[in-house]
Length: 381
View (cartoon, helix red, strand yellow):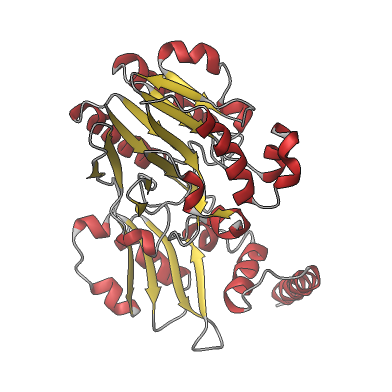
């Protein structure tokens, strides 16, 4: 049998509250569906973080409903889904028993019995995002043995391994943070939650482990793989990653990596104001999502207007600080445009860039007083 492994769609995600990625997400999911057809897969493994928020937006839900209906009903390809840390576990698994009849298998929350779907001689084990508290509550007889996330995984997966059927092949779909795996800027939850790291040895016994959670596609060992997110959600490392899905053949356990084209290329461009304005970049770069690093000047509203004329999907700009040559101020386009009406958010971003921390209540109070004094002076003039 052949399965397509994907994860971390993050439906509903926006760029720091501004630009919607819906068109990009629809585009890459259409490509995934076409790959599934071309590769004649027997199922799709979706390893968590289907949505970007536990309470998904109406738009995100519409995309999900449309896509799952198309894959399961039109293409007649079963989909095996688990909840990730971003998903609302109870919400995503609504009507899961009913949906099984349509070929949509969902594991939202941990159960005291292994959540497994049989497909011929292949058993697909579904393990949603877990916490130590959840595992202790689910297996109270094992609670004293659980002192870390690794302990929690061992308890759960020992139960799964105990249910293995002789001569059956075993796939695990999970959402986890493996020690020493590479993260990207958009792996914000993973970076914060390093206490959730586990060793790859906890997955011993499974023939293939289809992981989600980290956005960079990567091989942990010959049996464990992160498919990565289908599109780049951040600048930096993700710009250089080739987004892909993984096709797994259960006869040979061969893995085939298939790249996913992007609707918008993501690029960081560095140079002086004049260099960036005069540069003759190709259309793919110019029309893609762009981050500018301006090396010679502070970026104000006039220069921002000029940049936006040239780079229509400009998302973020970094320029020099007012009083320190080595200081850099990074702001999204939305923050620039809201600077007049929401100076407090601009100040907060300034503190993060320069002081490497959010401003205290006292500092915000002083800033507000300064703004009031400035406004009084302007009125008096």
